[in-house]
Image 1: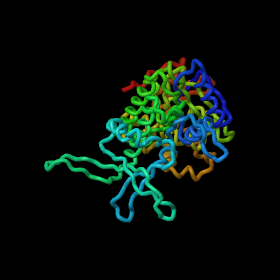
Image 2 (image 1 turned 120 degrees about the vertical axis):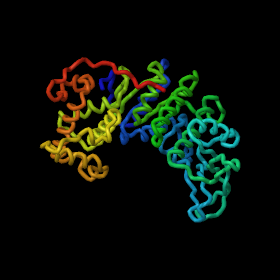
Image 3 (image 1 turned 90 degrees about the horizontal axis):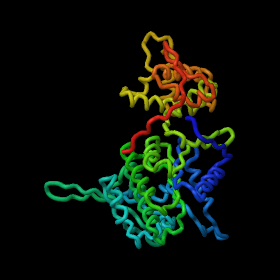
Image 4 (image 1 turned 60 degrees about the horizontal axis):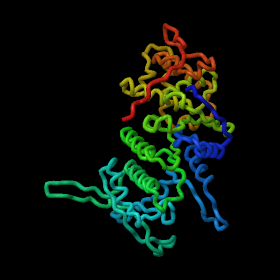
Length: 416
């Protein structure tokens, strides 16, 4: 998509430094909202941002920190004890020395988490303690654990099913609610979290369905945006709907909106400012696919991107599946290449085994399929804004040329 500003940064540390400088300005906005594809480096960026605010003493201990963060590493602070021998004791253990769990008992965290969890889930939990052993199995103390249970109402009365193992999605919801309870303590000025100057959140909804994605984004935005002295916040995601709801809920006046892309060859990062118009990921993807098709620089990642666009199109049009977007009659002379392209895009490990630069026959197929798709689904030429600005040819519809028109603002996905 056309952008107001694009900044080329040499590495993730430079990007993290740039974000800190933006948030430290006297007239700074409170939020940085960042969209990036999976694999771009969002999780590593969160680590780089956190490390810039951390000091370690000569003994290797952290003497200062300023960032409370949630990312893939946060989930590693929780681990399952599954009791594989007896299949009866199942619980989550909490990392015993992490600052993340400061004041766990003193602050009655279970009572703080429960009302938040009630927004998203029907299971319940108890904070408890269990013996802690060393690598030799010798007891060395106690550790905090979380036990899950469900309560059912039956004709005979209330029944409680204990020691359940919740699903991966439910576990993600619980960890997120735990984090939100800590953020609430930060906003309330609790002494245990006075060190928090920044909150950095990376992809909190990787396992959630779309209804929860909307709920999480809306709740988070209202929680942070409506507090005057809230810490400055960075939120990064690969989830289009989550990003769009955040943009709508927080508003342009309070947030920077960026689209991040990386160049694996040089290791550099391109940060594009999307404040100038609403962010519509599938439109940006179409523009990038068109650019790759016309330039011939078709990489392995473009095959997955094209499938994602087709999946979104199929959902919107009510088709049986994304393959319907490139379905062709039996008599079509290009039927073989269509079938080959479906096979390539349908098997995740197929192109992984191919070199980074796909074979020429796949590039040819890709080009034909994309042009057929773009011509069959009459997206406005304005959507190919990058192509129009760089004078790259825009795909033409069958039987009529697609007129180039000035890029226009598109309506945002309504927040719910």
